Image (tube, rainbow, N blue to C red):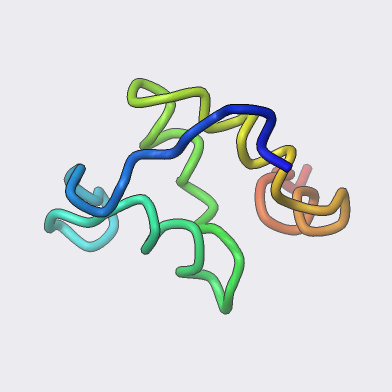
Length: 71
């Protein structure tokens, strides 16, 4: 379902601004009670097309609940 977009494997780590240590994308994908961390797009956009990947992985309700900013 990801149309050829491959997320980084668990050997690729970045520094998490919330936790202050290195984490893998798999952690970010499920950090929020099985849903992605709200910062996932901000943290991973330089690594791969994370927004396109997440839009294909999440339902519209999950996307809205995770990434839509409240006004």
